[in-house]
Length: 148
Figure 1 (tube, rainbow, N blue to C red):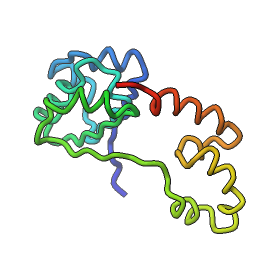
Figure 2 (cartoon, one colour; figure 1 turned 90 degrees about the horizontal axis):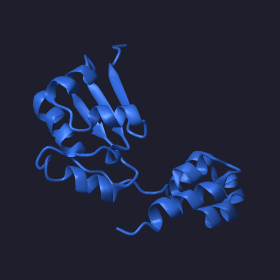
Figure 3 (tube, rainbow, N blue to C red; figure 1 turned 180 degrees about the vertical axis):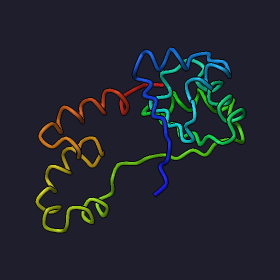
């Protein structure tokens, strides 16, 4: 099997954010190196991220760029204009009941119905059993009740 070279950049990290902020082509070349797939997470945290993404898209033709952000309104506002005609956007939704049932089975899903009705089907809630209340509070305060 062929080894796929990828680079994961987490923009929650201050150093990553600083390196991507107002970066020029040569700085970006140093960051990317020989990687062919570059995944940038929490991109909305980087000032002028749209320009850095445009440089990668325009100057590094062999690089596949995947960008995500948990705050889609902020991310969308920072990348829309610089990447016009060069991007595809995907909106991620919570897990559906059918997906949940297909994964856990009918009986296990039915046993979880009360918790799912209270805490929902957000992936982070599902991935932290026992901490659902805290995770859901964080989601509500960070995204659902955020005023733009």
